[in-house]
Length: 124
Image (tube, rainbow, N blue to C red; front, side, top):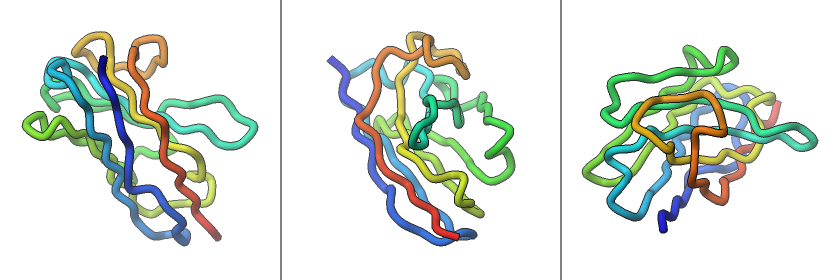
């Protein structure tokens, strides 16, 4: 059973930066795509960023493109989300997820394991 544990969330001001981490257990991490999703109060969980198994392919939601960077360290079984120039609309619970394959995907249905989430709050 794979466990994903997110960390790095917090309360920041608009324009600040945060780096989220997601540590994965198990031996399947290095062969799997990883994704970050977020959920604001009263809204559906939405795609933020994804990275393929090797780190060679990434994709971002339009709302975060140019501000967020997803990366991974397969030796540490960890995926990261560097968030820069944060805006109040970035507020939400951020979840990492492990894919069912090594291909990066924007779709929640392509992810099999999910973390418990970490809260990010951006004040104006």
